[in-house]
Amino acid sequence: MQHAYIPILGFAAASGTGKTTLLEQLIPLLKQQGLRIALIKHSHHNFQIDQPGKDSFRLRVAGASPVMLISSHRRAIITEFSTVQEPKLDDQLKLFDQSELDLILVEGFKTEIFPKIELHRSTMNKPFLYPNDPNIIAIATDIEILTPNRLTQLDINQPDIIATFILKQFLRLI
Image (cartoon, rainbow, N blue to C red; front, top):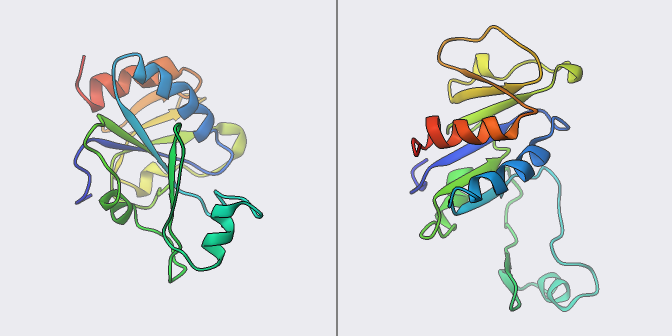
């Protein structure tokens, strides 16, 4: 990733595996260690961040792009893409202010080249990603599996252990 100026770590898995749920548990654990964390989430849906009838929606539909929606609590910048195509993570990192961050977590972008933790639940009967992705550095699963030596195996139901792996092995902070 040419435009990743700080560590970036992805979470890759089939839909429904629990990526968002795990990240929701991991982020507070990492923040407790003083890390400033950002998240980039890839969506395959045509999501709307502003709602029909609202001023920002009406102005965007009228042709304004980008539209910045801002309050005393948060800011959102909505940019329409002129060509509908899958986004590239590195292109998005160019636009991402990384100056006050320690770590960027990424949900999705599983086919791109950057370090990732694969999540796997045996009940989903999905194939593992790690045999075809040398960028997977660990696998968090709910069963014991035989993995190559290059991979660390983690318990997907133990976010504290995954957080420790991120701090010790990935970031080398403790």
